[in-house]
Image (cartoon, rainbow, N blue to C red; front, side, top):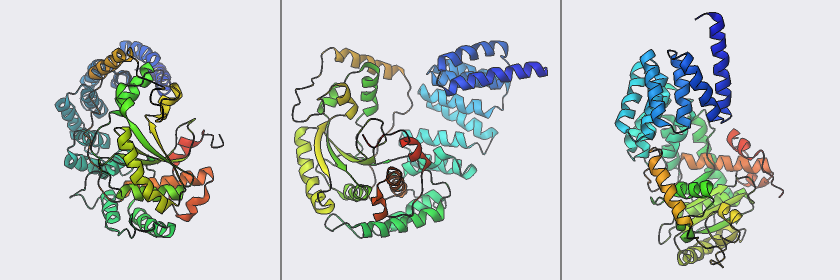
Length: 433
């Protein structure tokens, strides 16, 4: 190419990338399509066009363009990797795996392909293979944040029996060996938690360099999939509340101090419920949603919710000294904002399921069936006991408390890892409202 043509191409590519980052995908695709016509033998241009098609869920178009990029450059590892991603979305897993391996064959240290392989095996519940490829990704790029976060999440429901030399696996295993000297039958004190937390953080410091863990919720799952992604998609796309959600109840606990949230986590970790209900503790990151520290226990009926609330309340009164608010509500807060009164468990008839919503739910199910086949994740039961992920999230909680001016974090520890993730998530929240 002549220098002026190269400069023109560079300028066009920069415009397209800017539009892509601004999520102006259709504009980016239109310009990219024109650029491909003029430069149909430039692998980078073809790959960029494929990425935009991926983002627009035009899987077949993406596959076609990535193949053209590979025809132009048979060693273009990014195109092989992206081709694998496109095949995953179509549910063509063997083709996806083949292309991930092809990328690795060309570039042995290509961490992205290892992570994508691991994610595939993670999704289908083959945790042994997932572990192997997450570790491989980190062996070649110890700063690969996705692989690091994915591996930490994996150990929430899988105990590694290999790769114990990996620093993440090693830290998790060492934390699990620490004796927790408190139970639901004891008084859980800030001093006990602080001592335990310090031991855990010393292990983390010894093993890990990058401590920016992108999560703020600690779950204890029972292996049942509530299918919330489907229900929220129906709500966001059509402004309807799915029928299933009218039978979904939650025992909600609100707290005023992060020190109490940490105590509640230990209660949830050891709590035995008749139906082993799904539960989670978290800090509130959503805009325009009141409150800072919350916990939820998911229930399948009002009767189930009453039984759960009675059991939980007995421990909360003893351990949290009445420093909490416990309610039973229905469904998600966002639903209640759109349909005021929906979450009121004392007046279930205030908002009812509408007959014309049924057809919209059928449409959503068709969209999902015809959409991406990626992310049909196998749900496993959470492991008991505290793991590395729990410790890192508690660090995020303490950072959150410090940022919003809740000095109760000092009752647990003033020595924790600050998180750019938390700061970025809450920088626009108004905590005075």
